[in-house]
Image (cartoon, rainbow, N blue to C red; front, side, top):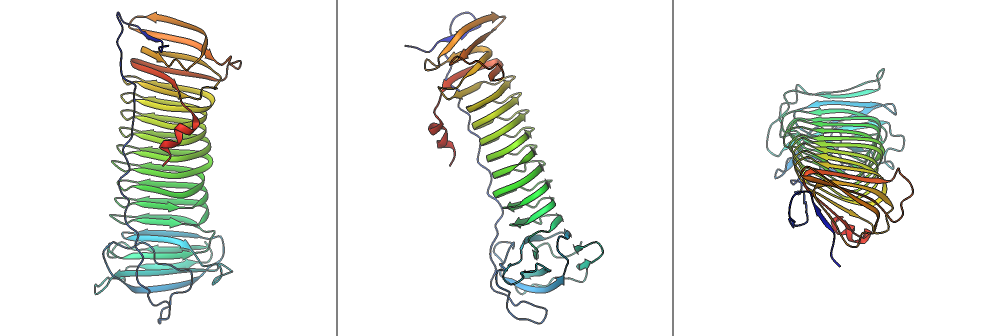
Amino acid sequence: MFAPRWSGSLGRLVLPQVHVRAGEAARSWTCRAGRSRPYGSEGGQRPPGVEPGVHPPGLARQTLREWTLPVSPFGQLRARLPCHLSLSPLDPLTYPDGDRVLVTVSGGEGGESDLTGLQVKYDEALKEVTILSDIIDPQASVEVHAPLKFDLNIRSSGPGCIKVQNLECDNCKVETEQGNSILQSIKSQKLNVQTKGGNVTCLGTIYGDIDIHASKKSIVTVDKLQGSSVNISTENGLLKARYLYTESSFLSSTTGDISLGSVHGNITVKSSMGNITVDSSSGCLEALTHQGAIDVYVSQLGKVELKSHTGSILVKVASSLQAHLQLSAKEVDVNSEIHIQEMDEVHKDDGITVTGQMNQANKHEKWIKADAPKGTINFRSQSWFQSLKLQD
């Protein structure tokens, strides 16, 4: 038994199935642990649980200066630096009260750095720690160990990179210019990340309402995001996320590809010129691209709407899925394993629209609409297990 295939033009044109594969993200900047260094303004050992953080790769490091600031809990850190900056929580065993902020500035061994313009202070009235400098050596690095719950408003200029890990915030704002950002296991009610040229990497699980904007060729890669609202945009770079568990997500790119793994909730994906890939969608999905192709697997259905103005669309569904269908393209190819009842086809101009329902669908709010006016729609079945091959 062969798969039915319709074409809006005269004759029959057999086209290959569409396979879209987004490129891999570029390698992120390196975080290397430095050697053990003295701690305290007059020497001594680094306290337990305080590990080295972000350093320029390939350089031996030495401590240039350190600060220990007594602080009140639930404060804020504001940093403006032209160098690398890393933030992590205090060791709870060494500092059970969480009432200190430790700041360490490191530089290349044997090198000299002018720290006269570096301001490190705590404003008790504002409950704010500030770390400010415009002239510190860009090859220097600043490590901060703060209470577990501390708000962040941090910015690096030039090639300075930022790493934040294992902190909880009401508000977390991270900005870079050419430097990369790494966020690992962050909980924040509001998380805002912006870069003008660096890559953004989210490791572990990031919780909260999340807004990430990456300009130019910056790449955004995500392990797992979980929250009410997620908004991520790139310009010319890849946007790649393995897991999204959100009530509402909006993902967009101007020319870059968008590659998503397992997504849950109401998801909107738009790219002007790039391809869109969704390995598994559970919920409502809207995907729109002007010049790219779309490749989507629908595991659990809400409403799915897909449109490629000049490209083709590949839709993969679970064979037991119940859904109303509306497929419009120059050519529609439905695999023979798909059982469609009340099927109808309408030819108009140079295209065709196929409608029907899968598996006696009885709820009109569950439907799949796909539109590829200048391309092909390929509709076939795929098991949930088969979709896991892309979750590496």
